[in-house]
Image (cartoon, rainbow, N blue to C red; front, side):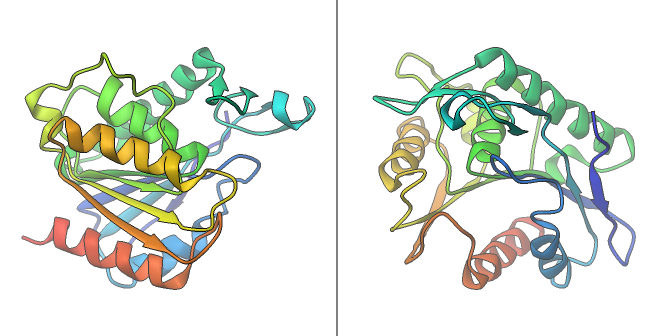
Length: 219
């Protein structure tokens, strides 16, 4: 397993964002975003893990960085759940490492783009037992959220920010809306924002994330 890329703050760290990249990308993908956000969050550490390189069925079996294999695109994403669980455990280990370094878990945020977002939603709501600061879900979906699942009262207090492009043809806006609606139906405090974009991240989106994180981390 590759070591995560860590962007240390200019001041002493009292908060952390663990940020997962998307399918086929790497741990450097969101470094420019982390650098931009750190300019308004000078005491926040950014931890960017690397997905393992493994075969992806829908891409002809080619090996690439992926948090889990995608077996089929429709009617719903069919995925390798064992690999998803392994990635989720990797995120939990990172949360624990930051907690053990002295960061209050209530000031640790999980962020993920596309496939990385699916992992952080799964981890935050279905696997991690303890406080968190919140979740940033960018252009993503939730393949493990099912109708029969309910959430404990502690999870309904976990803030979530869902951001998606109205022209996204990779993770359709309806898939993102389904994840958001699942959380809202269970009483989770969800903020959401849509942008006139495809499967990407825009500067305005980064600014909005900075504003949201600043508010959540305010004394």
